Image 1 (tube, rainbow, N blue to C red):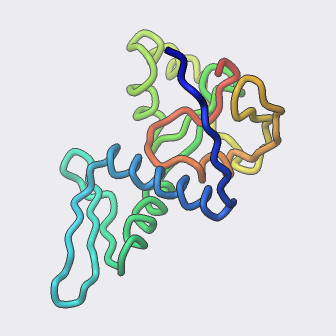
Image 2: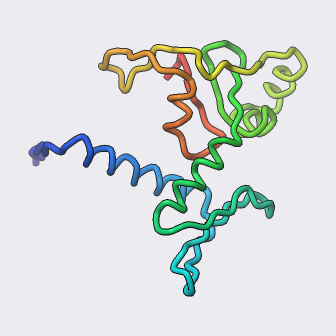
Length: 159
């Protein structure tokens, strides 16, 4: 049985809203924060913690609480190239990134031979949305602003 593809046209604002909602859900799924409603004020609090250490604690009205927590977590990240200048990762520390993405042998080599370094957030790279699309220049800061869970790959010449 062949499925029929149907297309729906939505406005840019609806598209942006759906993308924002998807990012919020990815953040919640990735970090599993504690969300609480203060019954007296109607405000919400969100606590994001890693291994028992609180990364951020925010109070505000409605969904803004999640957006502020995402902003806090994003601002904690550093960006490094590893092995090659076009292999770019974001995380709190180089060690966190190495533990997430590299084998123990590779980690030792990277640290021993200094095969990593900081990345200028204003540096531009050609980025494709998918294989068939045209490359668009984006800064590392723009790419970082699209991310909500860390550590993660910011840019790779192999993807």
